[in-house]
Image (cartoon, rainbow, N blue to C red; front, side):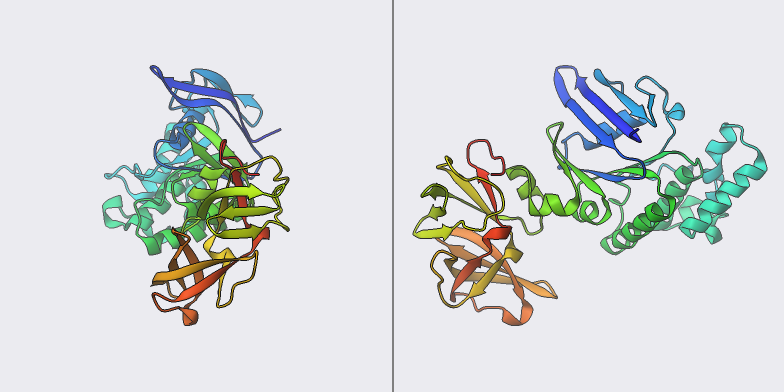
Length: 358
């Protein structure tokens, strides 16, 4: 039995189809991240799971129970919003316990749950403060704590860290991961930030236009993207893309005056695809001084961006702009003629017509 199961879900606002025949199964205790650009349908899907939107078609099951038409309070979920949604006139203790009081739980049980959640989130000293006296990170912990005290099966997070500064986001990412490891509850998390997705998720569902493009483990999505959109969306800086042609029965990739040997490519059969797009991540390219037939691309250094531990170098190769990561001590001077060695085993090839991975 899946913890959460979405079956043939379609959602329309008038004539606009926002979610399109979507299917998703989430395992017990799994941390799933819904990732994609603005307008892709990820928050809409989360709101459907929470019962805040009425489906056009399809079903939602939570812990084996059909909750498609159930009220949010009957679904066994706890939701954490981007905006915190705390009651400003109540203390932290009051915010965390309010829902339990409405549900009619005994006072000693409420106190026990609030104490446990505040200990887990390390907000015990803040229980008698009001939200106005808290920092953004503290408010978000309280919002998480309010969901935590409900002791539900599934937690839903709608971009909970997007209002925080970069340092605090990094710290709370670690706290969320630690929280999941401790509780083992199912968590479904919406974000547009790929770093959050890659660091938090057991699996990532990348969405575009109301459709899940790929659902897989973070490293699988990063190393073997299912299509051109996924490849371009995941990775910072973005993957380098080169349009060209596969020739000689799929044995070589030809563009401009460059011919790369495709022996060792792990994607699959390349035959009968006269046009393809080669994807190369910046860290999978190496700058060398000498050309190696079939394995290097000639390039000219344009600029470099020091990034602390390494440097991102931008080059012009056969009229195309490309980027490569290099150790900061090996930063080349602008205008230098170099060669980019390609690790074809880590490359990605996409069909130019349907943009699917080859």
